[in-house]
Image (cartoon, rainbow, N blue to C red; front, side, top):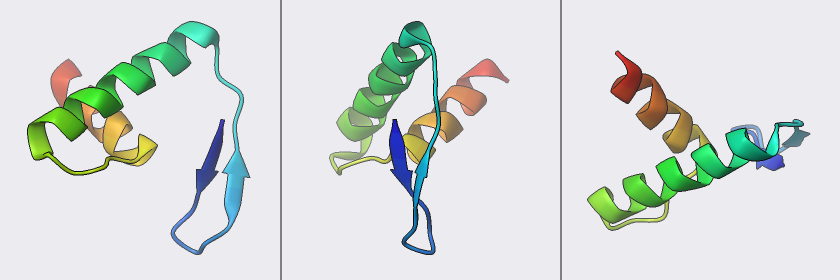
Length: 52
């Protein structure tokens, strides 16, 4: 998975297939709630908020 950082650089991380699926699901939920495109960073924040 590649992520563009705030400095415009591309960062790549390796995640397990299930983790990637969870991120995609969270990203879709954020997009559905806000009506705007979401980033993987938004998805991670969403997951952390739900877990608290």
